[in-house]
Length: 455
Ligand SMILES: Nc1nc2c(ncn2[C@@H]2O[C@H](COP(=O)(O)OP(=O)(O)OP(=O)(O)O)[C@@H](O)[C@H]2O)c(=O)[nH]1
Ligand SMILES: [Mg+2]
Image (cartoon, rainbow, N blue to C red; front, top):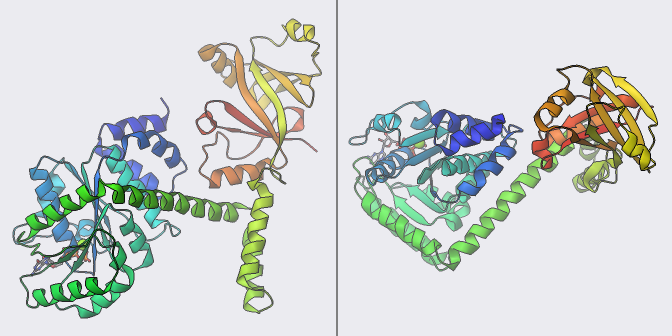
């Protein structure tokens, strides 16, 4: 079994080290993650995802812990994703009056994971969405996502939850202004936490007033009071979360899910395009020179973006390109001996060229077919990849080879897109070509050779 399949199987079986590793792959944009997610995807979509956001210190972690404990009491498995560098979930454990977070850390039915907020190239929401999917596939019934509701990134993260809870605390009029701007339209439930403090009712009143002025659809966000430290009001909050889940089971939920899925695709496309741009040779210099001209006011940002986009398109988007694919170079057939070619002679496809390729430990025999060719491959040593192939699968189609103009550029592009490669740098092949192989996992099952003709 491949390493990725093996990891997927262990994630699906709920093994904590495997889950942690899979989330690390998501976080670091590991090139194997797309393949992993493809294996996990059919088993996602079952977890209930609730996001909690609010100003630093509003009580998000405390409330998350209380919700997690309540879910555990119902026998549900809980995943917690803390997208928050200062969260107690990242730093260790805190002690509330009644809430012992340590219990969560030692409970095998709970998995707590913090996400670093830096180093995602703007892909924090993508990485978090991926982490949530991993937990979902691993069988966690509830996934709670805690974020500090400040930056744009965090709002994006928050949007990926099915139900978004915004926490406020008494006497935070300014925060309400801020929330109005960014979170108003994504909040499904408002919670005024620390209701043991003075002014909670006034804050509730302010939110209600704001809701009356603002626009909302069919769902009118409820405004609740909680004391996360003691658990007061949490039963009411859970009831509202249930009610919202029921609401989402209807048509409004379907359209909301659709918006979220589309955003998800868009985020990936956006990141891929940027990665491809950065992977183009000379793009860094070109970017810097555009920036210089823009700052000197001889060019403008839109023209720069347009020019860079057309470079990208030329470099391979539509396949019509400098480093793009030109044709099928040949089909590689594994055989015990290249001498038994009578059948191909009968077809009128005589051998044109025979050569030993040391790097692959094979003898190759080329029989041209129009613009392409058949390449018969005979192993020269037991450790030759062809010998192994013959042993495992017997003679037959071994690979498809596409001719590209620039194999290094194509490899860079594939790598940037997270495609699994057998060779990250080109090797010398037959005919003086430069070649590299792409893993069958990336191509739908067939080993793919990329070959750049020798000069
Ligand atoms: N009085 C009172 N204190 C609370 C309540 N809920 C949480 N706290 C306290 O508020 C402090 C911050 O709580 P956290 O749960 O860490 O808040 P947070 O929003 O996760 O904070 P950050 O992750 O740092 O942004 C802690 O000392 C909690 O014990 C509450 O309902 N009443
Ligand atoms: Mg916290």
